[in-house]
Length: 370
Image (cartoon, rainbow, N blue to C red; front, side):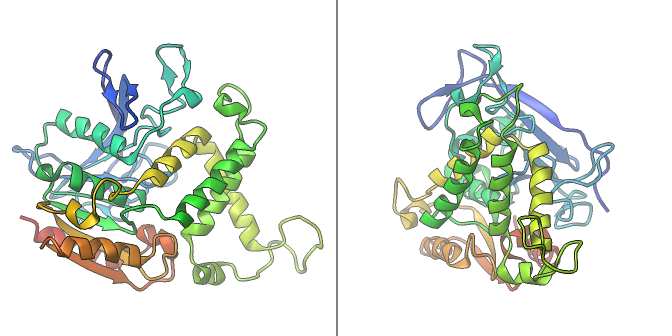
């Protein structure tokens, strides 16, 4: 059973002269956060769970929007009787700052100019995203969360919240994530960014109201989508099967199913996501290094949060060994942490696909959070 029809809400804060000071030292405000909630917040506001989305996600994590063809991106995990059981918990998901789905980002209107920010939008970090969402949780009157969770970038955010605001969080569920971006992960993002910035329609980020850089953004999405799958999952899904023909055409049309699939996915993505947001959020991911200011082991000293860390054997984008390094540092501080590696062929996308295994783990874990 899914959540019923849901609507996206918004909360605006950091009104001048009380703008939010970002990690870069630049001030940003006013700031609007788009968010959705599922379930009911109890009388003492003690049953809330915060869900964070991945790079190209948004606040619509579960349930249905009216006239929508698909439910929220983690609908299989959030709802009555599901892993994040909305019969018990009040679940919140917010679009990050820098995004393009209702939260303040480069496509938003800069009140100082009356035009979209474009590249005048300040560079943001994962920490800035977390600080902004802390304002939302405070606005909702929630003092302590039962849990914070997310996959991929969402896991980075849950981890950062646990370190930044440990007194506000009982537990964290980190899925297909790590504690810092590696050189390979940064390199993949840079190629994707260059594809966007090389598009003649990008116009140095000032393309709003004009032709969007859809070719560059489409190539970026193709690159990203390849990293989300595993070699085995691509072979099982596509192999070398031809698309709509009996033999190759010896030209540059789409001969193979995998080519058509990437084109289809990228065309859909271009219709729903802003190219500048892709630049800003991917850069925030690349800047992320939990241990940049202190040794990783020292960083977890005194953190009271209980952790569940889930990885997937076929995830080569955020491989399990990176999470194991993080778990080792947690255990060195006697933190209550459970680590589970799920055997699957779906690659990084497993956190969106491998529902049964995750659900059992999450349900059991949450049942033991006091």
